[in-house]
Image (cartoon, rainbow, N blue to C red; front, side, top):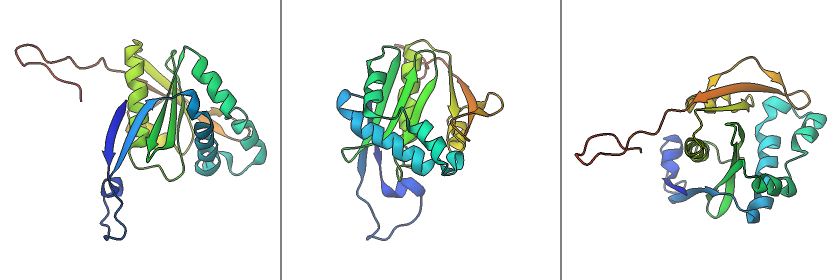
Length: 197
């Protein structure tokens, strides 16, 4: 499990009055469990509906196709597949994000609940997926990004891997890839080497 401390002031760097100050919150990213299915599916559906408007433009047919497999039943089927590694991000005991990595190196899901962006949750989800990819011995990750998520993926080291492709309905998928560096060496007995942070 990855745990990080997030304060309201670390979210955007802006000054806050005492009335606006939010208490420090602990965020954790952990392997998803069957009990998470309903909440995780809700995060996926809300994220797509509310945060991916640049992709679906409110088109009902596009949304219907995109959301068709974002159900608790589908989530459970993803968890049951050995080639999938799925994590959830929690804050204040609520699921705020979902990530899914396939053993072939494809990041299939990395979605946040509306209002959860800019808090480090996406980076924490991605770090957990990347850690698993390295454990599997993968050298490359790849994904198809929404328009809105492209800047995020670029910030975490992905590069465009070609022209946009048709997605659900009127949406388009933007292919990205990231070459994984081997984990930094552990410190040696003499104190040399680098440690992974």
